[in-house]
Structure formats: C-alpha cells, structure tokens
Image 1 (cartoon, rainbow, N blue to C red):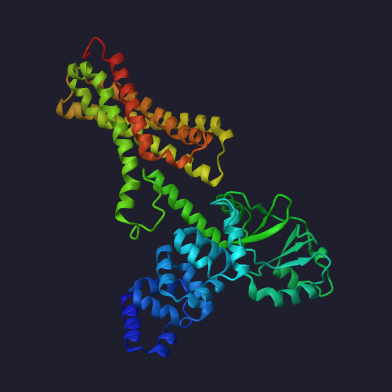
Image 2: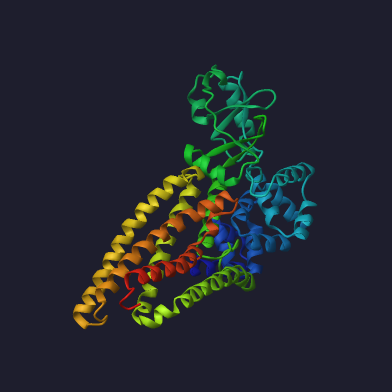
Length: 458
C-alpha cells in the first residue's frame, strides 16, 4: 500500500472526519481495502473497519490473514462481530473457524444464529483439507420441469443470497444433481422452454470427501467457474467457486515449494510467522540433511588410501558430487511437479525411468565431455596433472556419465516411491536427493578410478 495514501487515511482518522474517510475508500475493491487495513496500526484499523458498510466489511474481512482476522474480532463488540459473521459467506466463515484458536472459535460460535451455527458445524464435520470444508451451501437450484420464466423468477428471488448465479443447477425432488446450466443458456432461451429441454446431462461434479487438490485439477481441466459438490448418492450439497480454488492452488503450490527447498511448509506469510516457529520448521530438515552429509565423509574415508596415493583425485570430488546432485534435483523437481499436475501417475514409473535413463546418459556424456576437455586443456596449458593426465581425464569423464545418470534415476524414482508409500512426493526435496546422490556419487567416482588407474596412480 502506498505510504502517502496510508498517511492521508491516518490523518482523516486523527481529525475524526468520518464522512471524508468513508468517501476516501468508497468504491475501492475489497482486496485493496484489506491491504490498507493491514498497513494501519491496530487502533486505526478498527476505526476504519467500523465505518465500512456491512456488506463491504464482510468481503474485506475475508481478504485479511488469519492473525489479523483474530485480532480484529477481539477488538469488535459482540454485536459487531455477530453482524460480521452473519454477512460472511459460509465457506469464508468455515475457513475462519478452521484457523482460529479453540477458545476464540468457541466465543464466536456463541454469536452465531442457530441456522448459521448448524451450517458451520455441518461444514466443519468434513475431513480437514476435504472439498466439503471449501464448499458453500448457497447456490441456485431449479427443477427439471420448470420453465425458463419460472427459473428466472426464482433467480431474481434467490440471487442476492448466493455467492454466484453464473451457473444454475437442475435437481430432482430428492435434490439429486441432474445437470448444470449456464445463466446465459437460460437467459437466451424461450420463456416457455423447460429446463429439461436445455439439459444435456454432461454435468461435472465432485465428492465432498475428495481432497481439495482434486477440486483444483477438475476445475482447471474443465475450465469451470463453479463446481458442484455431491454426496455418495449424487445429492447436491453445495458448490465450490473459483476464488476458493485459486486460494487452494496457491497454498498447495507454496507448500510444495517450501518442501522442495528442504523445509516444512510455513503455513503463514514469511514476514508474519513467529521467529521460533520458522526456526523449528527449518531446523529439522537441516539437521537431517547435515547428518546425511556425514555419510559423504564416511564414504570418503573408505577411499582414504586411494586419495593418499592420487591426491589429484580429490580435486574433482566437488565437481563430481555437485553434478550428480544437480541432475538429481532437476529430475526430482520435474517429476514432483508432473505428479502435482496429474501428468504422471504411479503406473507411469517405467516410462519415467526409461526417459530419465536416456536423459541421464545424454546429460552425463555432455558433462563428461566438458570435464575431459577441461582437464586436457589445463594439462596442455599448465602441465597440472602429470604423465597420467589422460587416464585422469577418462576417469572424470566416465565417472560423470555414471554419476549424472544415477542422479537422474534416483531423483525421478524417489518421488514416485514416496507417493507409493503414501507420503507427500514433495518431501523428496532437492536437497535430500542431492545428499543421497553425493554419497553414491563418491562410490561411483572412486570405483571408476580404481579400475582405470590401477597399476598407474593406484
């Protein structure tokens, strides 16, 4: 938020010029007002929030982060909090209760009307991270025998109470979902046409117990603005709208990126998470990786005699293990993302392995050739590697082919293995793959050296 705008708003608050303050933010989009609130101190934040129209304040509140929502609710009177909760959409209200501490949640539950309370408890009854937690039970439903004229009258009557009217759902008398019609279809149809005449039966729906990531994939694949949610009998329970799915997509992508980087997901914005919590989430993986890297030193100790005889081999250890780690990290990142997008399934493991073996060999030959060429040029220019420089160059070149190939295989297979075992593939983070390949890369390197340099340097 621009500092000049923030300063102007703060000045109006100090002057207690409420009419000018209302006029200053009138017409602002809800996300921008939320950004303005977050830039103010707690006292000014409450003052500005209180002058917002009731409908606007509920939209703005939904864009605040959990910590500020909680703080703001604690500063509002019980009546103000009750009005705010009543204005919120059911899915936003459920998301709020999911994140708030237990004591704060109970206090707010006591402020809800009986109908809203029953609705919140119903939505919270679904498993965490399920589609049921995301859906809103407010939507437009019509009967198959209704005419277009009847449907439009119903939309006018109910439209202001639901989150979206872009899609109208056709249900039978048991509320079983029959079809989903775009509002455009209904508006352009003849007044006396029935809903059944407009139906094609090609409705896409999702179970309330599905993981919310599946909702993201379905809405992306079929380019939907709203997705109906049904139970095991096909009864329409609610809908998920695109704004909720975009939030989920962002959260899941952020979580995967954190894990790929070798950290637990922060679950809160970087600048707002408590320092001790951030350290706790980062330290665990770093300790695991540090202990794993100790295996590298252990592996090198097994080849202490070879290193003592041919110290020149130690010069290329960083080159070898970094190349293997980098190739493994590449493969792991590509496969993790492909799994997340549904481009790859567990059944494709053999195809993935075959592609990565070929890719690893090709990349290994490229890097091995560069390594061979580098040693050759440095030998010709500076005479650094002694009379057996050609054998050393061959050792490094062939070892690079083996290490890079192994890195791509390990990096591509580990996410699939973790998914098969029921773990999150993103936990096979790039640092973890790099550590694994470091140890095995040393074994490959010194094994190649033992074969090629036997009788000369070894």
